[in-house]
Image 1 (cartoon, rainbow, N blue to C red):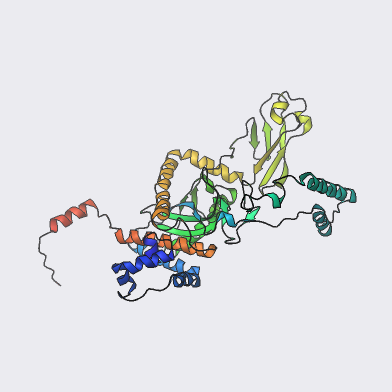
Image 2 (image 1 turned 45 degrees about the vertical axis):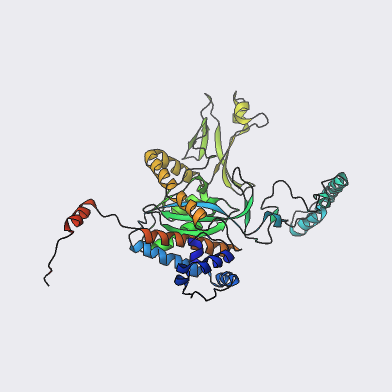
Length: 439
């Protein structure tokens, strides 16, 4: 496996052909010239039998070698991720099972809820479902059996998502897409790279169906453990705006990690025309003179996407005679409403920190782009991390750990410590001189 990752060979069959024809590899593997190498299935089967802890232990062993050689500072880590193609085709996608009969769905709700759906409401749902079936009956391309091509294969919708489809070949692989590229079944490979000599201090596979911010804790937990086991502590973390979320900032704050993560694009530090009164926990209007509208705190609610928000709302009486009501509230609304994330104090804290230390943050952005991004590109293009040749999250995690391990091992073999200029001059002068030591 080491030979395969060093030489960017993804297929086990191709790996055995390469090993059989290279004398230096045969010597490394301790196989004679006439001795047969194992079958390709032996490699894949052995890879399955070893657990993730074996690969993680091997990665940590190589990391300790780099640490003993002075290649890791440990203070600042840069985090990023990339999609890795799964060993499954988009043609293997099938639709998830859904409840097609609306009346059956209503009956199920009635059985499990104290709020019963009335008979009239049930009749209305059944009538709508029946009308929908009759309207679509006989129309080409609308019935599931009619949606086939000239070869009789079922035609999928133009856009498929993880909510509607999954792959039985590899259920852990998720549909994901990058701008300008086609959709694929992918995993997310996450890396944490030390900024001193670009040594990988953490590597793991995560689901590609979630945002980077939702899987940040996985790579950070492993990196903290790898550093603490070698007597180091993670102090600073640099990441892009994809890792920005309230939960991620709260997690890093609980870990006492100084994070430098730009807030996402929808973040608003201020509300135009309103000021926030922290003592009274309310927003106050500053657009008009005279009587001021006050937006009091009405509670916390969770929207359809699962985000918890604090709700502030004015009374209709305050906004009734305001000349800016239509512009501020809208034509159909008689009051002003503002909703903020429950993690807004953390977003504000990050916003102020990035503004106060703007020059330092620009240097950190350049440091991140010159640290973790080239490492990801090297792994994908030269160390067999473009595609996973196995299936399942555990196999993906082993794959990424092996690629990161080989990258660190290659840097360890090539690393030479830069001596200070004074020491280099002294060593140059000592060449050709004889020394006598008396004990």
